[in-house]
Image (cartoon, rainbow, N blue to C red; front, side):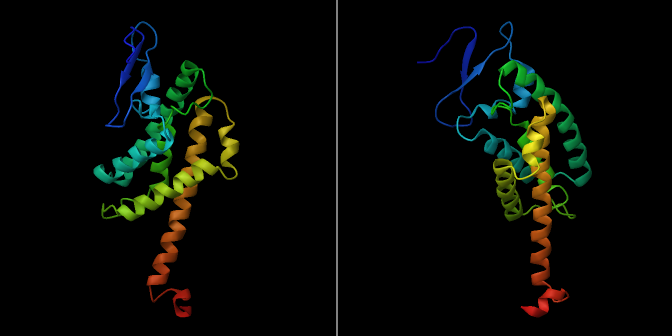
Length: 195
């Protein structure tokens, strides 16, 4: 049964079974900070909301194929906006680093693929995006040093920073993997002679 009281509404999200309960803030209006921090309520998906936030970032790159300059400016803009809306949303949701806040995963994944996908020619490889997706989720979930320290920072800064660092780890890992693969496939590589 759907609760139709004035302060509670349910929305279906992209064909996912069930409904996502959204809390209306204030006088019957949706809180914009919660809406943006949850990426238009993607963060309310009951199973693995962070993974779905990362998936939105994956799809953004796959379909829009932004150039490097636009992507850099977009990441900086979203990072600054993310700090603010995450901090406000955290207070409104009354939950530290709420799982509903997924703008940090969106930005972190973009950092992870920056300069790698799309490449200089504007081409996107599905395999590269998928490897970046898996690496980013690995670093975001396990939080190796010093990612966990960044998460301990207070407010929106802490929410955004741990995923930014996970994105940096992803980017470095992708560059190493790409270098090793290019070296292995090249005859000019020092290590290629030992195959």
